[in-house]
Amino acid sequence: GRSGLWSLILQMSAGPSPENSHNRGALWKVVGGGDKGGIVTRIGQDVSSEFSPEGRLATGAIVEELELLGERLHFRRLSGDGPASGWASLRLANGKALLSPVEVAVWEVIGGVDKGGIIVRQAMNTSSPEAAGGRLATRSLVEQVDLVGERLNFKRLTGAGPDTGWVSIALHGKDLLVRWEGKSSADPPDVPEILRLLRDHHDTSFARSQLVISELPDDKRKELAPELCKVLKEEHPKVQRKAIKALASLAIGDSDVFEAVGQALQDKEATVRCEAAMALGNLRLAGQLAESCAAKLLEILRADAYWRVRLHSAKSLLKLGPAACSSSDLQAILRAEVDSDVQQVLTQGLQARGAAVEAPAPAIANGSGGELSRADGQKIRVVAVHGANSNSAIMKFQTAKLKSALGTDAEWIFVDSPMIWNPIPGSQDPLFMEPSPIEKSLAKGQQFSWWYSHGNTVYNAVDEGVQNLLKAIESASRVDVVLSFSQGSNCVSLALDALRRSGKHAPWKLSVMVLGGQIDDPIFQWPESWVSDQPTVRILNKGHDSFFSDQGGEGSLKHMYSNLVEIEHGDGHMFPRSEPRASEIYAQLAQEIRKQIRG
Image (cartoon, rainbow, N blue to C red; front, side, top):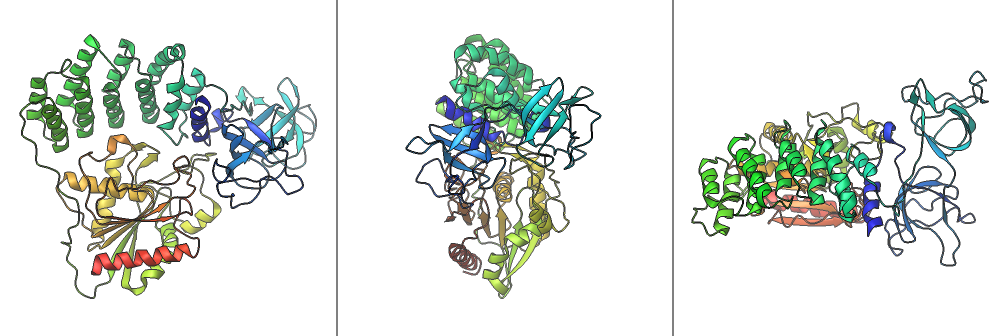
């Protein structure tokens, strides 16, 4: 329904930046469980799902609504004790309230970022003494007691600083506090809110932010389309790509939409051109517009230097059908095309039309094939590939139990990506949030990095990241095992595809993926007709996962790998740690590694 789709967008736009931080979910206060230390929370929507391991959500805690499905609230805790997130019931079976909407005016502090917060005074007069307790911390939430002009008398709800006092809501025309205009998932979206989400760089799910558009009535769709066309003129590739995807999902095949998306085919950023090429096949164009679209795509196939743009242009061209593009035009493009993947798509399309076309040579099977030489008695050499916003020092800590299980049979090489990762201040998105003190300690002063720019289903700098990874593996000389975590595993899959395209086998015998390995940006996904026979062992999480919260954990990669062993755990998006299952997994993994490498 509408509320379910809209709530997906709200929950995935976590951690907004100060300038738009007032656009959040509705606020709720825990009013039940006073005699038990709080209310019961669970990790899933179902009331039979597991209890949250952190215990009860304390009475008096303030939470933000991420999703509201009937009487079940998916929340993020803002104040008080208890789980950082989870699911709770609004009331007991007897009707007694457990959570109640916060109905007072709430403000969020967005000023004082570089000073630790904003000044609080004891009285309304700006010359009155400062309140005890120091500054009111940035991102604190306060309840409005009184508002006189631009002076706010508050009571602090979350954050640090004085419990009460007076502050200015603006200074020299710049906001210091903004009203928390929380939006419930039960409320329908409007066009300005959808546009705001498109521009929100903290949105961790590119695909989900489009789902609500399918629920819009026709008048709202027509209102949204020209606004999306304007967004396409913005500079940030992620925003442009989201706008293109949204236009395609509107399914409004008019000339203005076609021209806006067609113009994006000339964008300097290759991923934007790819997105535009994919969208043109989904706009439901007909007649003259379909013919004009085919002409644009043919032009791109002749002129664009990046093979992925030509690949997606070819796929969209075939969707338009013979009426828009003749087989003779496709054959002319095929004769001039030099890329094997693009040739494959064009050939299959022509054959589907009944044209006599010789099929190109199939892609090689991308397994190591056991051809790598190793002397008897040599230790198993493992190259360890860290995940996003991480480094080799953290990876050493994560792999300690596996290292112990392999013992003296293995030697380890830990590599670092040269692509530096930086947090986004205030973000709650796991990909962009500030590292915790523990993570900073484990990093041992090393910079945090990632293998490519990642925001779920929106990748950038992939080719650079793949080359960096392959270079790191090659520099290790003889490699038996590439062990990767999360985004590192995704990059291994991307690297295998790059090796396939260059006609090479993987220069290592076994891939071990601890989480990840999927490629969720459609631009970079493997050809549908290709499955890798690279020997692979994968540890996947089937428990609660912040990256796959609506999917019951990670899915299988059997559609990508034919020689695959998958081992499940339920500890979340991390290396297995709960005993005795963790030790069982590491023992099984060590056994698989020895068997694959030593026979």
